[in-house]
Length: 315
Length: 235
Image 1 (tube, rainbow over the protein chains, first blue to last red):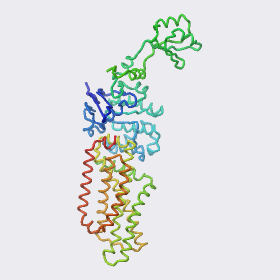
Image 2 (tube, each protein chain N blue to C red; image 1 turned 90 degrees about the horizontal axis):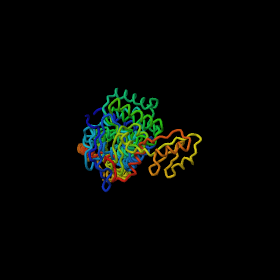
Image 3 (cartoon, one colour; image 1 turned 120 degrees about the vertical axis):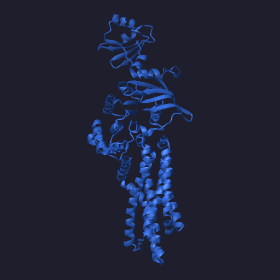
């Protein structure tokens, strides 16, 4: 079994009176994409800073690639790539100069550095802007350069803090498509925090949900979704000439929610069971195209877990 | 290590060359005006009083060019580089590469000092031209005076700059720290001019000044190497 690339063991981080993280535990396996989601102020950025060694834990242990990131940060240089919400670019340098600067910092020779910079500029679809100053770049372009810098040294671990924030669709797709490729080709592990749940759901192998410094759940994405799967929530796909009034009268005590051409029906609090509803639907002759059980999304998991009181949290 | 040092130095030089020229000129203007007050009074002295001491006074007063200009301009560059990188988070990926913060600080400070030194030499040449052709003031090219202007005064300025640079890395109170430079410059001018600092006193202290500056520089570098990166990033 491979050693985890990142490991948090009962980590607590307190700032004076505030405890930003409490007893946080998770491990990130090689080649895994680990999504870390939670509301604002939940402790996501604190976790990232602990991983980068900018904070030392109050209690517990943080190991990154087998090293303590606070005291052994010099051993991690080049093995950890970071991309943060604030790209932190050097505005007076050109894209090529910027990448070459970081290439030199992580130990590339001049020749390798130039080749790698050109390769990455191609990858982030900015080869024609290589000699433009970064000050002239839009936010999306800056994030692309930031992604290129992050991948520069072919790191074993990539840490991304809110990488999708405020980006256009193209840049989001670029990040979303690049990360799984890198994981597959290089065995890189990716730790990603975000509010953008559809993207996290699509690319993450494992997801952790954090709230007020506590991890509410850590599991494979599918396993988390199956936890909140509810057979009593149905999606009724309506045909063109449906009768909504007739439909809602079938089960008056059910919870209905209109979603474009579909009706989401929650029978949880209803006296009518799912089978009875289907029978009544047939008997009433209401024209519907399909009825199916709603597959939970990561958003459903997130709301189900974050709205529950902390005492009842799952592990 | 050599690649790292040259990369940091190259980056600082590129940024220096690309700063807004108006900004840089306005920063340079203040110490240049200040040193001209001293220069003018020493030119008057040299024209009015007889003797070797009075004759060399204007040339000796040229030491105020590096002595004032380097800390003033250096402080402005520190603000533009360190403070800006801290504020925008640009320093964060640099530190995450595993580079020793002390080495990063020393390379940045030395590079900035070299840029300021070159600018001060250009100003010095203009001063000499104006003194010679406009004021007809005598220029004395004695070895001790040349060492004073080209070595001792800039080294003293480097010590000041290293301390400012250290403060910029230590604290987030940039407005307060930055205001110390002009105040420090004025105080230095008052002290050095007011106490009739003789060239002999400074000349005799060259070795001491070099040693003191090297010690200050090393101590600052060691302190930064041992400082937590959280402190440097002001997180």
